[in-house]
Amino acid sequence: MKNIFPKDFLWGASSSAFQIEGAWDEDGKGMTVADFNSFKKSEIQADSKVATDFYHHWKEDIDLMKELGLKTYRFSLSWARIIPTGDGEINKAGIDFYNKVIDYLIECDITPFVTLYHFDLPYALVEKYNGWENRECAFAFERYAKVCFENFGDRVKYWQPHNEQNLMMRVKERMNIYETDAYLVEKIRAQMDYHMSLAHALATNACHEMVEGGKIGPSISATVTYPYSNKPEDVWAAKLNDNFKTNYLLDMHYNGEYPGYYMRYLEELDIVPNMLKEDKEILKKAKMDFIAFNYYRTLCARHLDATTENPKGTRESEIDYDLYGYFKIEKNPNLKATEYGAQIDPVGMRIALNEYYNKYHLPLIITENGLGTGDVLTEDERVHDDYRIDYLRDHIDACRKGIEDGVELMGYCPWSVIDLLSSHQGFKKRYGFVYINREDHDFKDLRRIKKDSYYWYQEVIKSNGENL
Ligand code: BG6
Image (tube, rainbow, N blue to C red):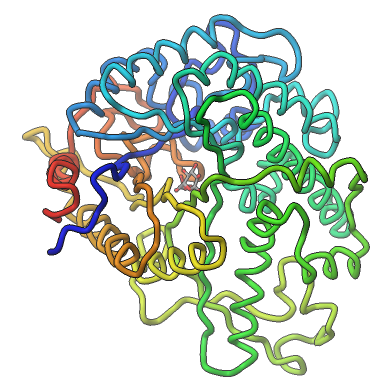
């Protein structure tokens, strides 16, 4: 295989604070929305109380990253560990913890790639003013971002404001929306989404002002949707799905305003958020330095016949937020899926690379991509995860092809560096290169065991992508 990965390619791996750290209330940390949601499922699966216990194993874990050969580690800071109430006192213990982690990463020659917010809004902000629904939340985020830039910006040069804003805002419990009236849900959601974009812009501008050489960009969940057939309506349905799930937000970050089709949707549903005149300048000024995206699968959209399958059959249903009136997401018969239903599709990743790059001409980085499944620890202390190796190999090959297509790809960070708390399925679903010896309700000894994929990825990095 021809080696075309640039010399300084950021071979990495990812995690997020609530999924890895544990120590959910230690040393002054406040509770988060992610903790709250995970505690609700405590009886049926692992929660964020211990997770992978990175808080107490950080040095050992970074040693494993070093041995793996990582050039970068993409992780998130816990806002509530740094500012327990979200907008109040700063917790020195939180700053100290992240300083230790960042210093040791640098000592190990691993570039820190930091997300400020990964599903874990401080719960106090929900209690105070229902989180993102209130404009103040955007300014609380700006302050938090500034605290991070001030304390870590001398060493951390890569930043991301939010993880997967476009996906997060669609999941009611992540946004803490408990309203049941469908219209109000959409209205609140649109307002929250706008405030998050404003927060994104405020943090971007602050990063450019405060961090010398700092680069900042969003981390979006990539949506690539295929038409179910070559019927024009199916093709249009696929386009709508990409536009409403991902592209509208990239356009907002890029242009500082929503694209026309999105404004039309907001207007026709009568859910235009409150957007102040003074925001315009903030949004327009905030220029992304790169686009990071998380990629797991592709989708397939089938148009619903207006008379038989979609009784609503109106234009209104076409722009219904979830768009279910107009089309339905179907299984793609051409693709295999993981046991959790994600359709495995490396070609889709090449499509995303080409589309985003050719539209925005900004460097790209993949901040998540991986296979979640129940791994088995064998008696000889190994995990033979050849299925994961196959998955990653095919996706790295798609990166290679993307680079050959002319895409400027800065790096590739599989999810996840070590096993961690799945955001849906606790510890049953594992993604890591390193196995953590625990089950949902049995912490065992939390021993770290390198999987076969660890040794394989080590060789990939060592050969700069030549030995797949
Ligand atoms: C991404 C999130 O959407 O998907 C991660 O950024 C998450 O936090 C990952 O873990 C995989 O999803 P899950 O539900 O399998 O953990």
